[in-house]
Image (cartoon, rainbow over all chains, first blue to last red; front, side):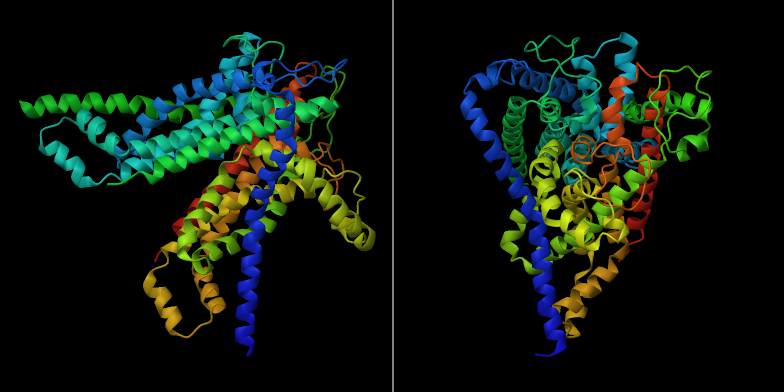
Length: 281
Length: 315
C-alpha cells in the first residue's frame, strides 16, 4: 500500500470518528436525562404534574412542578400569539415586495435579532416592562419570549413563501383574484406547512429558553398560576434555580423537570418533522 | 377603472403588511436604544475606556462621592467571553467539518436524511439540558479524566497551570459549548459544500485523486464558508447564558489568563448571576447593561463578517 492510499484510509477513519464524536453527545444527553429524571417522575407520580414544589427545608417530599408547567404553557402561548402574526406578515411583505428597501432592512434585522443574546432581550424587557411597574410579570416573560421567536418564524415563513411556484401565483391573478386573495389563498395556502414548521421550531425554542425569563417572569412557586400580571415560573427557570440550590430533593425535582422538558421538546421536534415530510406539490 | 380599484386595494395590502414589518425593525431599534441609554451612566461616571479595561468588580453601596474610583470593569468578562468562545470553536471546527464531510461523502445516501434530522435535533435542544448534562456528567469526567492528570504532568504549561479545584471551569463550559454549536456550524459548511458545482467535482475525480485529496480540494474551495461557520459559532457561543452559567464557575477573574481550569465569569454569566441585585448597588445595573452592549456590538461585528465572507463564495 503506498503512502497516498494509507493517508486516504487514515482520513476516512479520522473523519468517521470525529463525526461520531460530534453526534454521540446528544444521544448521551437524552439517555442521561432520562436515567436521572424518569425515576423521579415515577416516584412522584401524577402529583408531579399537579402539585406545587415542596419547601426546601423540613421536608424531603417531591411535590410537583405544576407552577412551572402552567407558566411555560401560558408564556409560550402568549408569546406565540404575539410573535406569529407580526413575523408571518413581515415575511409576507418580504416575499411580496422582494426589492423594496424595507425588505432589505427587515432581513438584516431578523438576522441580527437571531444573534442578540437572549439574556440581553431579558434585561431590555426588564428595563421597559418590569422596572416601570415595579413587578415581575408573566406577561413581561411572554414578551421576551415573543422577541426570541420573531426571527425564527420570519425566516422559516419567508423561505416557505419564496418556494411557492411563481406559476401558481400567476394563475391566481389570471383568474382575477385580488392581491390579498392571492396571498391568502395561494401563497400562504401552499406554504402553510412550511409556516407551521417555522412556528413549531420557534415554540420549541421559546419553551427551552431560560435567560430571557430570569428577570422578567422571575419565578413564583407558591401557587400554580397567579395570572398574567404576577410573577410566573417556567420549566427551564425552575431547573436553573433548583439545580443550583443546596437541597438534595430540589436537585431531584430539577432532573424530573428536565425529563419533562426533554419529552415536550422531542414531541415538538417530531411534529415539525411530520409537517415537513407532508409537503408535496 | 378596474385598474384604479386594484391599485387602492394593493395600497391597502402594502400598508397592512408594512406595519408589522416596521414593528420587527422597531424591536431591534428599541433593544439597541435601551441598551445604549441604560449603560450610558456607567460610561459617564467611570469613562468609556476605563469601563472596558479596568479589572475589578466592587459591589459597593457607597455613593459616588465616597467611592471616587471605578467600580466595575469589563475586561476580565470580555476576555472570558472571547477565550471561552475561542475554545468552543477550536474544538467544534474539526468536529463540524468532519460531520459535514461524513454526511456528504461517506454516509450512504439513504442514511443522510436521518443524520440531518439528528443535527436539527441537536440545534433545537433546550440549552439548559446541555447545561445540566455538563454539570452532572461532563464536568466530573473532564476533571478526573483530563484536568487533574494534565495539571499534574503538564502543569508548567500556562493552559494547565492552575489547579482544577472544581469541575466547573472555562474548559468544561468550552467543551459543552463546542457540542452545542456543532449543528449550526455543520449547516453552514454543508450548504456551501453542496453548492460546489458537480462539474468541478467530476473534474476532481477524473484526475484520479484519492478521497482525501478530493475532499481537501473541495474544502479549499469553500474556505470562506468554513471561516464564516467559525464566526457563527463564536456568535452562538458568546451569547449562550443559562447553560454556561451552570458550568463556567461564576467567579470574577482578577487575573485573566490562559488557564483552562479556572472558574471565570463571562459577559453573559455575570448578568445572570448579578442582575438580581441591581437594586442594592448603585451603577451595577448600568455596568451589566454595558456588558450587554459590548456583547451586542461584538455579536453584530462577528455576524457581519460572517455574512460578508459567505458572499465571497461564487461558483
